[in-house]
Amino acid sequence: MSQLPEAAIQQKDDLETSLPDHTQLPDKDGNFVKNYQEPPQGDLLTDSITPILQKRHPDGNYCIGRDCGIYWRLPDPPEAPEKGAEAPDWFYIPNVPPTVNGQIRRSYVLWQEPTIPLIALEFVSGSGAEERDRTPVKGKFWVYERAIQIPFYGIYEVSQAKVDMYRLVNGRYQPMTPNDRGRYPIEPLGVELGIWQGEYQNQRWPWLRWWDAEGKLLLTSQERAARFAEQLRALGVEPE
Image (tube, rainbow, N blue to C red; front, top):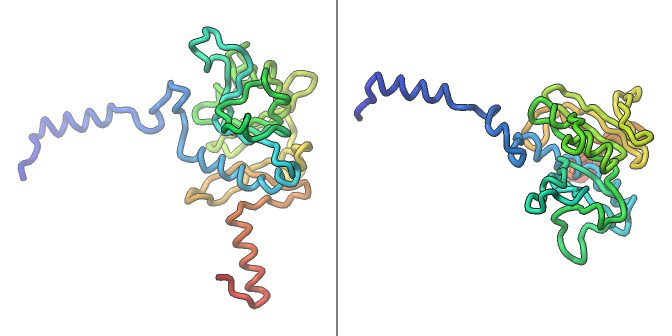
């Protein structure tokens, strides 16, 4: 097999070192600034809180959104509808049906809906500046606080193993103080939100998770199944 000449090898090495890596691609297009931890993070939040929401909404009238647009104003210009919306990484809306006239929701249009989201969470992919942007009309923080007025807003930074929580008080976000367990009570849901260190979907990170009001971790469906299996074995029954 023929080998590349030394000059060609050097050129190839120079090209590879000059190309952007996964931390730099992409860094502009808001539709794609994600990382491999974000999808399972959303799964974890949804899976573990679902039993709580099912008890609170026996009629099934609640919505969980992930990267779905919340339209808070008519777009300007009309041909750029995304300029009238924000899309939190995870949010929960109580007391609304999961469908609209039997159709799957494609967005949440505030001027056509009876209520606003109770909580919105953003997962930081970059520096966190976008999630803390208070620029009127354009900044996420400003939109959630001043336009939509979501009661609870959280900014989660996996690289820092922390979440900053804000609560709307008299129309302005005030930083929340963690309780004695280091977590943030979300009283309308009867849960706490905090950081859990462990493995989920083959990734070991600090994860954003729910606990109940007594401080017990809300388990995922897989964790609940594993616990049930342990209880059966303790009774001398081997689960299939």
